[in-house]
Image (tube, rainbow over all chains, first blue to last red; front, side):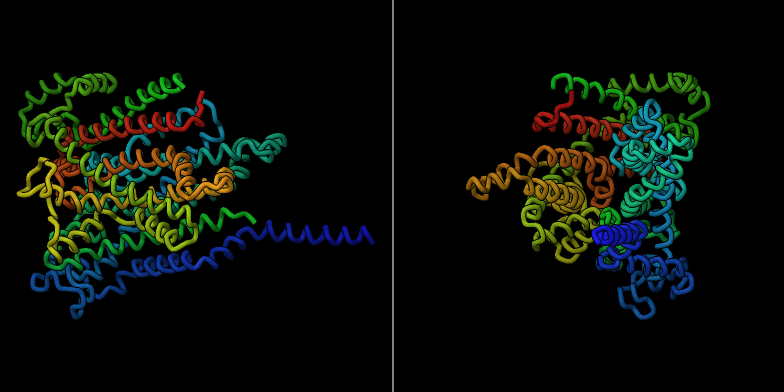
Length: 299
Length: 317
């Protein structure tokens, strides 16, 4: 009687444990789906992503085709819902097309920095010792620059251009990702299961691939997503300074720059590209926050 | 404590050297011959060669760095390609203008951030808390150069209340403390203050909330201390970390003001950098970045020292 009750209890516990272990991602999605703000922001981002992806098919006009007779029309003009810019090009069309470069320059540098920074950070954290010293002291040097200044310095020296701006932004985001990766890896390295794997004869490479990466990629990834919003603002800022994209290419930061001269004529048309940057950046920030909350809570 | 201070100051020296090296390398990674950063492109070939020898550009990179470093330490940042004047002469007035703007912007950001964050941390879940969280998210997500344009549209174009350009009436570049100049400062300073406001709000809210949960606060309340009495204790505990964050933010503003200065044509380092970028005036670019980065290194050091002095719990060998 007693034993059977105990056995039943054990079975219940085992079932709960099984649910808890295979249900981690399920739990994350459940928490995410209850988080209305995050879901709303994710939905906005999805809509924007689809809109800029299909920009060539859904835009009403040609993004490069201007007209001297319909320059700087106000918002609500017939045929040009969001007005026209200083060369008579349709703003809505250019916003849709411009999003492609803005998103590309916001995401690609972070993705590249994620790969490079994680590699270096995991190496530093896992090996420790002199290699750790070397890598971490090098990141200290880049931390001695404010990030905006570093981005402008590198791309200013390399000269204008999309590729140079992407190189500069990648350089800016590698050091912070190294720091996060190193501290997470150092925490995991000393856990018992790593010792157990080492004792059972696994090579360093196998330990990193199987046991370390699985545990550190999540936190580093979350951190990297929080950088996308910063990267997008910085990338548009570089274009705004004339360092990133070059005219006539549509890009939100560059559009803001060229429309700046028009703020006395059509002020509300001139600030539209900034609305797009702000919306994207705040949504990325909030989605990143929501992901962090959903994934940190371990059930 | 004393040894910690010495060690921290000594540690800043290799960092400063490395920062100098990165700035030195900026000219090296620039496309084309570094000699182009010293002589104008239309200089005759024999002049180019003699300058190359004078500057030691025919020597190995390490020796070039040494030569460059010796000059920088003596205050010689080279000459501007565009104007021919020494870089330092343009830079010194630009830096004081940027400092004025950054200091004023951080003052606005810190005061509002501290009040909002403090209230939010004390009254968790209230309307003020939500307002603080929204401010924090908006502050870090907003492209501040765009916010500058929006403020110009509202206050200069629509209502004609404040000037949109420059640091003083008639495009004067020198800062004077009077109402005319002060009007020019308001819009750029408010624009620039949103970033530190967001970050300080978030930091203060987190720290205050954590302190309010600690047992000594309950003990103080149990002892019969009123709200203001408890407030004093909370401030004392929160101060070291909050001051550290504020100090770093001031440094970020020195660098981050570049875009805002461009929007408002504020005659600071940002505008200088902007024109240097357009004219590919590498000595000005390099000198400005070097001075701003060194300022940031020094600020980092000061923040660490002040934090250690304020917080006796930080006992590092």
